[in-house]
Image (cartoon, rainbow, N blue to C red; front, top):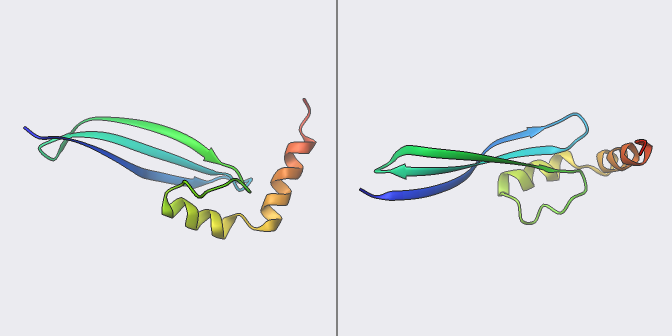
Length: 82
């Protein structure tokens, strides 16, 4: 019986304001078959540092997070009432 822990980015979504939602799956495998899994989500906002993100997330951010998208996102934060 061999147990293995596998962590992978299994879902990447871009939402309307340019934010990228990332879902990470942690699976426990026993002899190659999943016996348990857990999910974690986080959001990468336009203009955020993506250097620690998965390569796929970095590639998407490089193409989606244009200066125009970053400026629009930052303007929407300023416009929100407290």
